[in-house]
Image (cartoon, rainbow, N blue to C red; front, side):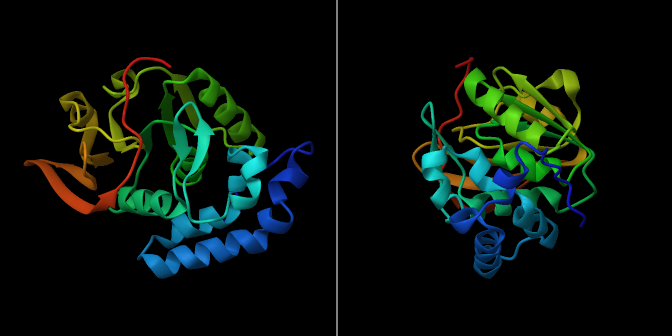
Length: 228
């Protein structure tokens, strides 16, 4: 696909990266991900382009293309690249996605991956400082199809639904029924579910009800209510 990112002149060199943040390092990470799991090629193409180092603190930039989660402050993390690729690939399987809801913007990296793949993305983040940072980086990268909302996403965001896809980046012991009500028919919800032991699950809304699939083990920070 063509490059959807248009870093402005003030951030262009930073977005390209050098050394441990270079395109070669990014390519090496994506090649590793492709070896670990069967992933959607569209997701891998996008992840080759996205400068993940812009979404972490400068002190951690040299680790941005390791296949690990990293702290971003406020008790939150930027997800492991393999997890981002797996969740996004699972979301794309099925009818085309038009409007998607992301619950838990966090660093904004998963947001950027989704925004490059779907026409319309709504992302909600409970911690205003994280939302502000993510908004700035997404703007610098030229991703204009994201509506970023600060608030409690535990019940979704029904005012902007229904959604063809919902992706949740924090774990809940159980998911609120309101989330499934916001799925359009054929829509998919991807979320880590569980308290002590988490599993990544995909729920698909069909004319006969919800279809549930287990995608593998997961390890996410807990989904919290209220604003941070």
